[in-house]
Length: 214
Ligand code: SAM
Image 1 (cartoon, rainbow, N blue to C red):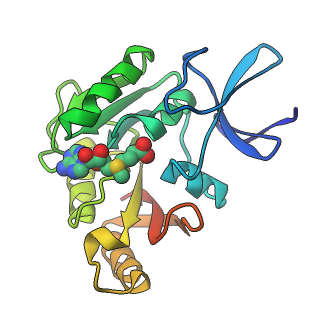
Image 2: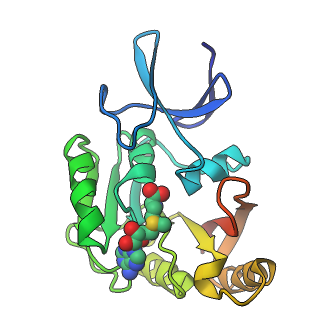
Image 3: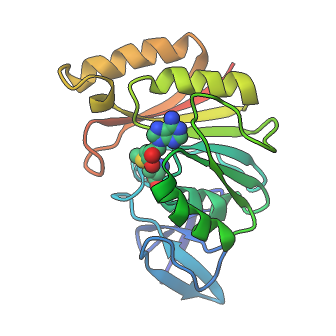
C-alpha cells in the first residue's frame, strides 16, 4: 500500500484520507485501522467529518504538530480525534454542550493524552485551564455560529480559525449560496479569508471557511 503525506499529519493511503493513530489499536467511530511499516493509520471518512471533507476537497487545514486547538462542538470526538492525531505534541480542548454525547467524548479522551473534554456552552467562552490557543475549530450548527466564533477568537486569540457553516442552521428558507455570501462578508470584517470550500458531495449545503484572526 502506498502512503503519501499531503499536509502535516495528513496522509493518503491508496487514495483514502488517513491520520497516524495516536492511540494504536483503538478505533473511535468504527474507522478502518491499517498497519504499514510498523505504523498504524486510521482511515478518515469524509462523509463522517466536515474537516475530512474539506481536506478531500483540497483545503490545507494549516494544523501543526504542536498546535493547541480549541474545538467547539466536539460531539463524540469523531473529527476531534483526527485533530488529536495531527496535533500529537499539542493539545485539543474539546467543548461540547450535550451531556449525552459528552459521555462518549470522555471515553475517547481517556485514550488520548492530548484531548481534554470540556462540558460547556461555547456562547459563554469560559473554559477552565484554557489559555491562548493557536487554532479555533468550530462546528456547532447554530444560527449565531459566526458570533460564537468571533467571541471565542476574541477570548483565546488564535492564529487561525476554521468554521463549518451549515446554511440550514442559519435560515432554512433562503438559498445556501446567499447565506454563504453574506457569511463571507461578515467574516471578512474580522478575519482574513484564506480558503473556502463547499463540502458536497460529502455534506449538503455546508461551506468550510479557513480564516486568519486579524
Ligand atoms: N464536530 C463534530 C465532528 O465532526 O465529529 C460534529 C459536531 S455536531 C455537527 C455539532 C455539535 O455541537 C453537537 O454535538 C452539539 O451538541 C454541539 N453544540 C451545539 N451548540 C453548542 C454550544 N452552544 N456549545 C457547545 N457545543 C454545542
